[in-house]
Length: 77
Image (cartoon, rainbow, N blue to C red; front, top):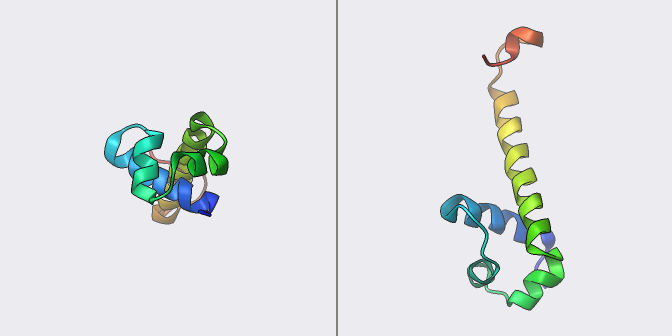
């Protein structure tokens, strides 16, 4: 069985390279069946939400790490 974290990360990579999430294509990329993918994620919409959340969290962490000032002065304009 594949973990949800593995599916979300794989989904993120798939989304970045294809601009969408195709469950059949993602299942092939992760070397699992579509049934397993749906068992782990529940639905394509739920997976897409998790992927977008994961990608946004990565971007936010990167932006916070690059910040050189504190407070309002640290907010990009």
